[in-house]
Length: 402
Image (cartoon, rainbow, N blue to C red; front, side, top):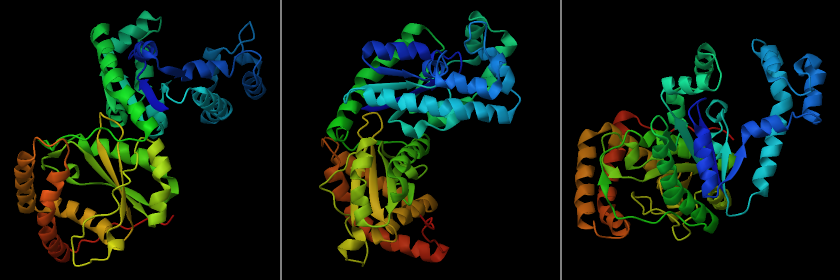
C-alpha cells in the first residue's frame, strides 16, 4: 500500500483535505479519532489513566475530561511522560492494526497533527502538509469557540513554517478559497498518488523522461534530505550512510530534475538484501544495472560494483546508487561532487557539456544516450579531480561503525 502522512498546524484545514482524499477512495487513519478511542469509557487505556492520575480526570459521566487531563500535565514534564507512556503505545498498536487491515492496493492517509513535531515524516512514502496564514488559522479557531489568546498559544506551541516545509513533499496552501485547495488535492490524487501506488505495488520506477536540463533548484538539497531519511529508515543498519550526490548536489549547476543519492553498504550482499526494503519504501531496484563504468586506472569490476534503485514517485524522480564502502565507484561519486562544488571552471565546463549533449538528444524518450555521450569527459575529469584531491588534501568521509 501507499502510506501518506497528512499534517498541518492547528486551524490549517487538513480535515478538508482528508475528506477530499477519502472521497477519491483513500483509506483514512485519523490519529485524533484513535487517541479518543483508546481512552474511551470501558477501555484499558482509561483505566490505566485513572490508576495513574486519579478520578479527578473524569467528567460526571465517567469519560475522560480532556481539559482536566491537560491541566494536570501541562506544566509537569514527568506527568506528561506518564500520560504519553500509557496512550502512545495503544495509539501505535491501533494505527498499525488499521493499516494492516487496508487492502494491498490502498492509498492510506494517516492524518496526524504532530507528524512534524514527532519526526515521523520518514515513515511515509509521501508527506503532505496543509498550511494557511496564521491570522486565518486564528480566525478559524475562534469561530470554533477558542479564545484568541488560546488559539495563538496553541499555534506557537506547534512546529513553525520552516520545520513543516522541511518535512513537506507536498505543500497545500489552504489560505484561499476552499475550491482552490480541493482542486490541488484532485490533481495530487490523479497525477501523483494513484500512479505512485501502482508503481510501488508493481515494483516499477516512474516513467523515464527526455534529458531536459533546468537551472539549479535550491529545493533539491532539502528534497534529497527527505529521500535520505526514508532510505535510512527502510535500510536500517545495512546502510552505513547516505549522501546527496550528482549534479543536483552541486550549487549553481544546471541539471536534470532527478535527485541522486548514494547509499554506502558493507558488501554487494548487503546491497542485494536491500532490494525488498527499498522497493517497499518506494524505490524499486533496476536489475539490469550491475556496476559503473570505470573512470580510473583501476579496472577491477568489483571496484565498480553497484546496485541501482529508482523512485516510483512520478512527482519526485530520483536514483539511488548502492555502492560498497571504500570501493573506487563509491569514492569517485563523492570526489566528483566535492570537486565540482569547489572548482568553478570545472563546473562551467561540465555544464557546457551537459547542455550540448542534452540538446543533441532532446527528442529521446530517456536519458540513456545522453549519459553515454558524457562518458569520455568523465574519464578525463577523473585525473583532474584526483589532482584537486591531492592539492587540497581531500579524503572521503569517515564511516560510522555499525
